[in-house]
Image (cartoon, rainbow, N blue to C red; front, side):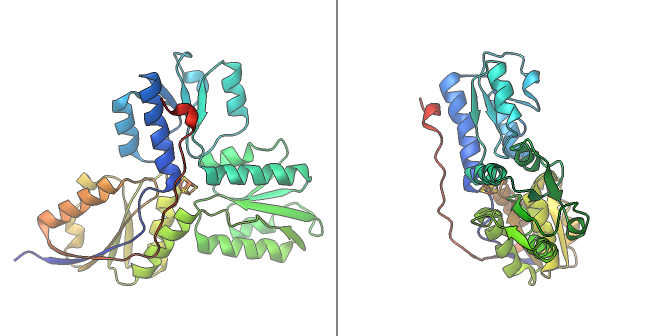
Length: 313
Ligand code: SF4
């Protein structure tokens, strides 16, 4: 008889509303304008999604000056862009569409708002992540980037003056709380965002993992190594009791020998990973083990972001 494996499947998992909308925008653009359509940066951080869109006629570039045929439309990725990017697109006379997730745009507006009030802005996030580059590029003034608690101590700002903070959307909920506490400890007058900047999808996926991690010997997170929300899910699984946790970037190359001495596996997928990859992983496990699936539902999600009307045929 085959070896038995208990699978704990996290819910919710996989695509969020911002990712769905961004992919839909590229598809609608291909539908309306034909091939090729350019996309600035990976539309979402997932190789499977990018390769599929390439096969449908999308061309991915990192910067607008790489676009060979300037008569073709270009779409900006879900992570958001600095203000200099739409400005450059206008100068190059490009037809552009912005697939920035509305929840990232909300943070851009917060930065603008704090800017108008001349408040120094602290951004909690990961250096060089495209979302952080985009958010920092909403202001002509210096934005103070903080990656960890220790960075708060080194901030060269007057402790008695008013400061505001915003965060990246895909951070660890727990680590960010600690950093915010540290900011409030150091500064007397802290202006907070109206609503938590860590988005609903990041929060729900992390909470779902927290609920089941303690049952698991091994946690598999389907996602990409350049995806912030994927990496955070691996950390959360480890921090909340899974003996091991790994990122699965390619289901085909997952070595099944790692399950030799274990019985309980947790599975989730990051906000940029499609459900088809979860099905592929489950089928691979089904072909090799006798599996029992326990699916947990932490929270129902029904958020939907509309594709701009201008992209409809
Ligand atoms: S993870 Fe959150 S902020 Fe990022 S695209 Fe999804 S909903 Fe938007």
